[in-house]
Length: 138
Image (cartoon, rainbow, N blue to C red):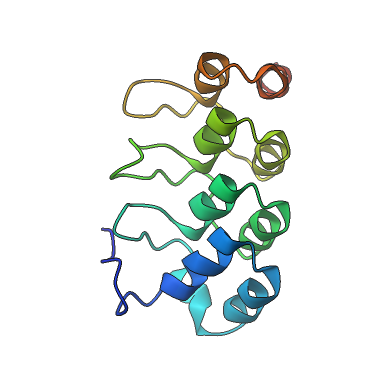
C-alpha cells in the first residue's frame, strides 16, 4: 500500500535523498531508523530505488541495493507497474540498468502494458540499453 506524500510520510526523507542524489544523507538515513522504510512506496507507488533510477544516480542506486532494496518491486500507481529496470531502460540510463541487473533485476518483468524493460528501451530508442538487456538475456 502506498504511503501518503505529505509531511507525515515517514519515508519521505529517504525518497528525497535518493531523488536528489544525496548519497551521504542516504547512507546516514539507512544506518538509522529509515532502513525500515527501504521498500516503502510513496503516494505515487514509488520506492526510493525508483527515485534513484529516475535520477540516474549510480551511487544512490548502489547504496539502496546494498542496503537490501528490492530491484523487482513495481510502482503500482502512476508508473504503470514499472520496476526500476523499466525506468532505467525507458530513460536510457545504461549504468543504472547494469547495476540493477547485477543485483538480480528481473529482465522479463512486465509493466501494466505487458512491456519488458527491453521493449521500453526499443520503444524509446536506447540501443545501448537494448544491447545490454539482450546480452543479459542470453
